[in-house]
Amino acid sequence: MCLLIIGGMILSSVAVVGAIARGRPVQSERQRAVGLAEQLMTEIMQCAFQDPDGGTVLGRDAGETGRATYDDVDDYEGWEGSILTRKDGTPLAGYDGWKRRVKVTYVTPGNPNSGTGSTVTSLKRIVVTVITPSDVKYELVGLRSVFGAYEEPPPVETNYLTWAGVAVRVGDTAVTVHGGAHPLNVTSSQP
Image 1 (spheres, rainbow, N blue to C red):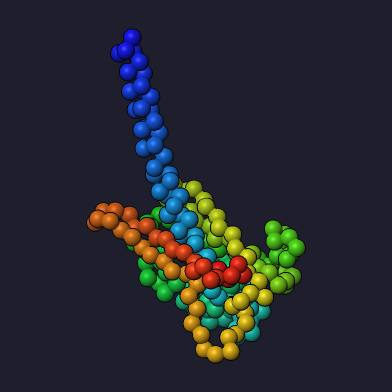
Image 2 (spheres, one colour; image 1 turned 120 degrees about the vertical axis):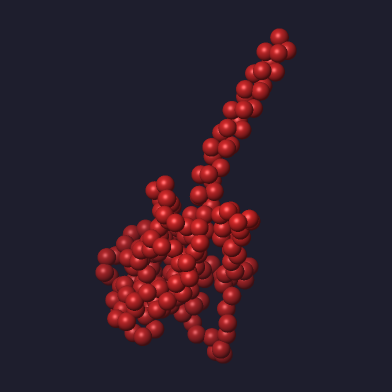
């Protein structure tokens, strides 16, 4: 009888360990996708709400040919990347097969899920989508207001720290994990 009970416990333990092992790659992929989405969303949120040069087009203005030249939130409208890089073009190692895309729309301040088409409002909705090599999609949604703290120029030249990030890799064949955090003094209207 003892052997039967012990055998049942061993089988249950093996089943649990197997389930954990099968779930680990999914959890790792999700964590990497969220990190990629946060990195791009932070980059977008730090841009101005309106084009500093006076452009009024929703999307890229003349002369804005890549992310390094984007200066307002809606320049990212329709942007897609299948080779993952930082804003300056530096490639992100270990992300072959990953994709990112961005959708920026004007939304009604009273209902941020309701787009206004081409009608200009004081609120933009940003959706960053990360697509994994296994074709799973993760979305991160952000709202950017014309009344945000970034729209008010400081009275003196000031540097802001709104996000700090880190990339960690253990060993030569390990995957690089990206992460970061906002300082505690960042208000809810900032990224």
